Length: 140
Image (tube, rainbow, N blue to C red):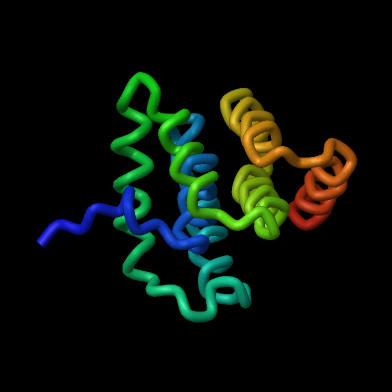
């Protein structure tokens, strides 16, 4: 039985989808990024009732969308339809943490973060503070 995730995305699915999207944006999903995603899902309160088995389903949805010409727009459409505004900064913070997890920010990751800021209508100053926090947490 195949589940149609496009109709049933939860807020947590949206957060996972954005983390996966950032990791996949440079076409090189690194182990440190996967560990960051799994750790976030395992420890953050927003994921306390989340079914970890959904990660692979959501990941496949993101990969499938990325293969389509307008896939990123479709992904943002799904996310904006299912993610409550109160979680926009949380979504951006998680995306920044995944981008920073491997210690380097590729151009594709930076472009996607910029697009996330725009699509989630984040205040530039708030976004800068979130970015600064992610950078501080991932310094070596």
